[in-house]
Length: 251
Image 1 (cartoon, one colour):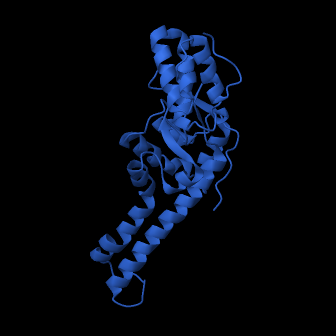
Image 2 (image 1 turned 90 degrees about the vertical axis):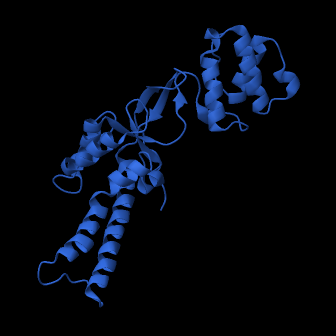
Image 3 (image 1 turned 30 degrees about the vertical axis):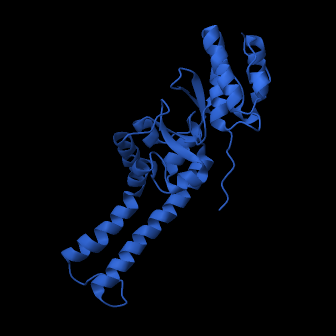
């Protein structure tokens, strides 16, 4: 199944561990729906598979029919586990995959807290309990409407839990450069590190920024003579050139 293209969305601004604001692209209703459809099929298949296999074992013949009279074994070994697989799927899988599910991974999205962190068990529990409201009156009408009218495309469960659905990937440093413009020798992490160095350039001691610039230039494919330059302006220029920035940060 083809992954949907990211639709225009808002952004969640959070502080990174370095103290520089980064931007996380918020997923909209399209990505949410794509992820939900995949996860819904997975949990339905799991629940039906459990019910079918356990019913066949219970009946001892090719029949999925429940017993004519109430039976605690049927209820506890066939019916309840099938319901648990269906209704607890999102909470258990999101907890195990740190805010993700197979459907969310296919859609390229994940759940984060408003500070950009991984949601804890409590937040995920609240988020999933509120599915009872989001699914009203049918086909997740309330939740889908909420994602369409809220600025960060959140459903009721997200509002209650303090979570946001964002696109996966390395966060972009704000007001520095577009990571998509990074040079071919850079990976996403390298582009982020250099962007943070450029953002903090004027606040660092000359010796520190010269040393860090040398390390970045040597690490990402700049030839040794160029990387050993002592002129701070030249080092700064080389960093900008390496990431393909359209403008220079002030020295």
